[in-house]
Image (cartoon, rainbow, N blue to C red):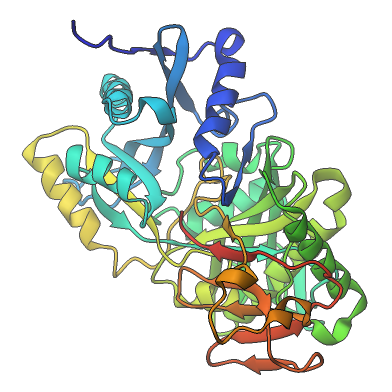
Length: 487
């Protein structure tokens, strides 16, 4: 007797909402020694695609159990595919975005994920989509195998996800920099004139800027210069200026950390107190309090021009940080996230971020849905522009949750009976120290462990990015805690 196949159908809000949320929770549960940062959709499983022009969610049901989900959206964007000369709006293409693929742990390796992808691609084809694309962590081997090896997606871009924790103290905004908020019409005018040729620039940018989740657009320029009446009466923009928009996810969904041990909670609270009351440690990165549900700001449409633009971008980021800090009570904003082109060294260098939480290479993959020779040639040309195109417009409607979630792995301390010969029985009674090791571009490790250093010793090596800080306020032996980048 053959195995029964799962039924693939459209998402039903009334019947499926609770079951989808339950599936999300089951898919995020890892081994007992790991703790995951995951999304709480607050009763709206399609919150990540609800603001897209067209969206669809499919579910897989087997024996009255919901065993898989997938989401997709469709929009018009700029794609440089070298079309025939003279074609109107030749660089516009209709693209479909795939996200949120989940399969229940007990039903994996049964083809359910593949069937969900196939059905979503059929929806793309029925709606005349030119390209389908998806984003994943480059180390997510299962996702890479499914899309690149089985479905023929190819590497398109490797943007960097930059994550900056919201600290207790405000960040400094230079007094010689003027920051001004633009009206939606002004922001749209600038974006269409400055970024319309950027890959994946949305044709409905006015809808993005006017969305209730978009908090606004700000420009920065040197104090003493004017930014009034730009674009009219032939007046030029300042020689150096920068622009940034902010999207608030706090009203839509929260992130939270589940199954955190008490020692991790004490550790986070201790860092918060140190950050607040010990200014001498302000150069050391403090750990955000991830143990309560929190939202975050997503900075999008980052643009800069001129020799001073790097400094202006940095001051805009400080301004957004301070804005997030003041709204913590309303939206519990704990981090500020942005995603920039992998080749844009100016933005990567000047946007403040914590390497422990950031991802230097997110992986975007793309596939031509109209499989004719012209589309295949255009797709090859498109992927070749990766090294020449530094800028990339990331639509906040789709990237409003980090693609590089933090994963915390807890490992029990070695017991005295099984400790190496070099260990001493009194090791657990010695002062605890925090050792932060940024081991690579995309991954980093935090380790709480006993140290042989004197209790007041503070060691910092900027070359190895290593810091050791006393944490004597934690009285119980601590587990090893590792923070890693892509899961």
